[in-house]
Image (cartoon, rainbow over all chains, first blue to last red; front, side, top):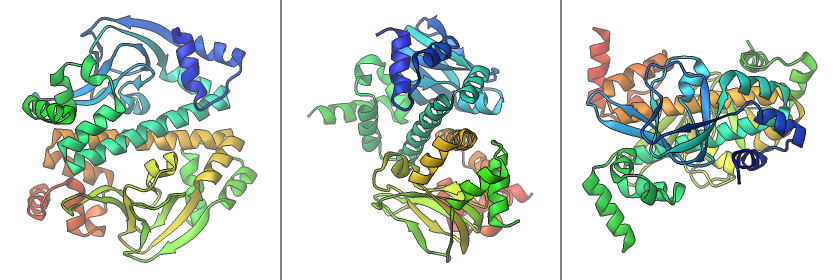
Length: 193
Length: 193
């Protein structure tokens, strides 16, 4: 499936666009490639774009005062990523976005998203449900942080991203869970038994 | 300002509805009153409604395995509350919603929201931006939990809900911040100086 078909199948989960409507929408997406390790958004940047992942894996992360990295989200194929706080409120980025692997993305500007949503009601419907999904995932992650049980957080992570353990370096998985490398190994070995 | 005017002013921040459109939308909202301490949603419930606060204050919360309460959100006038995971995915409630004070609410069903969004493009636009705002707030709260600095969390809370300290019992504020009552007193006194 090529990038155009992937995005279409993704949108079709929530909205029905005609062929000419989809062709028009797709014209506003710009294909981009980045190499492993490249930085897409850095704290303090102006943020004007969001990214739909075609291949590879991104991470959004935050470095705290003690220079410890916390991972907010991994973005795999068909996931979206940006600093949405900065994007929606037109403020400076407070998180970073970079590439865990080589990636191919489709990129959409804030301005084009708003224009397209105003022109095509079904696309506005899609983006409402896209954000509903993000909101729910974010609330779940918050709950699991509050519950503060590393084992449950680990199981939820595997459920959400089944292939993650093979794709992503272990220290990044530990940074997502907020646990040490040793705790992660213990959880991994317990789960295999 | 009565309930109908409050909701209209709130929607008008993101969407323009004509008078007949707004009258039609408002017909789908049902006014409800609850007493302090009443439970609106309980873990395990089927969830079909979301609530717009006219007067008073709600909390969504979660009781973990150690019977410790964690507060996800306070909802003050013009805020919305529900178990959105349960509401959007039609699964059982995983959090609780109850009344910190006597409250007056407007209640909208899942079905009516979807029907109205399909009928009125501007209303779909409003709900998209309402959820965008919720998503951003949720990501911010997640970041501040990861950063794990009680002082910053306290300052962010006061910024988001300036009157909270006078309205809400101190043990609930501590449960929102994930700190002890003693830590909260220390933060409060430091801030007054």
